[in-house]
Image (cartoon, rainbow, N blue to C red):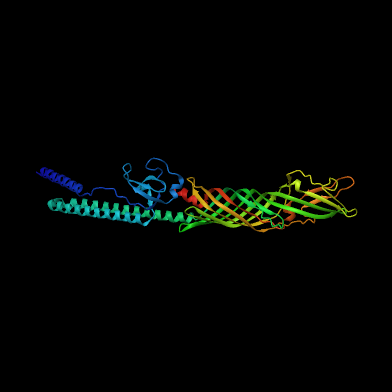
Length: 454
């Protein structure tokens, strides 16, 4: 009899457990996917996510960028999120929301999940109470089981809450740490520029003409950035070496006395082209906007290293007249007293060190490349505000004539028009500049990124 009673109690317990399991399955809410981000939200990609949904591996720079949500789900990737900046699909679990809309959506989803769980627990509690009323003899055992299950759920809920709080705090610490380490970066620039240039001769005789220049720039810059400020501030120093040429056109008529002979020299269409190998040292302040526009301005020191020139004289219109006061005889273009037969054009070399202090400005646009470096294109202009050029005056002006002797004829040499007439030189150039920038984050920021990978 006792054995039969034991078997009946066991059968009753099995039946009650089956009813409870079926009720739980009916009461459990249906699972459905809801995105915790919205279109237009700003997100960042977690470091541990090493692949897109399409299988490709992201570039290094992708993890440090803030991206905008363009689309939620597609037929191929129903749980995927399309990011606007890189046009790639990422799993939602790989994203870190960084603005209010995504955070509100996440909190709303958590609230709905909590409400569904509470309703589910309430219904389960009612079924448990009904089962306790139907099977009073099993109340103690079922109450103990229910208490144990409730304790496990509460512990699981507490552990889940602690895990979410830990992730949330880790995200906040990561963002703050990134702001703290991302405030500075360096760059090395290789630039090539070219355009129009002129020495701007200040001379009573003649007119200066424009030429051209080409310069190679090697520059180093240090930038200070702030996430709250759309403009990066920087300081640029460097070294430039290049070539410049411009010209001067003039006519001249000069009278002077040599060896008791009165000479008059007349020359027309004298053309001179001044060449210049120059060294430049800039110190500029730089502004770079987040949209890619940049503006650089500051002083620049320019030193001519080598200054050859080329000269062309119209031989047919160059005449030398010699008047002998003792005899009253006048002779023109005589080989003995002087006749200009110089080879045209003539090239002469000279070195003249004079420092130009210039005001320089650059403006343009730069594109950020996938490698993290950038390519810039813009316009530039340099204008000399101070020049140390000093001219050594010559009493004979542009001409240097050696009087004839018993052993040699007279010789006429045409001097540099720039050196003979210009009492002051300036400098101006303007044109287009192309530059490639190698960007280097500070060492602390690199260490921070390396730590995030682990």
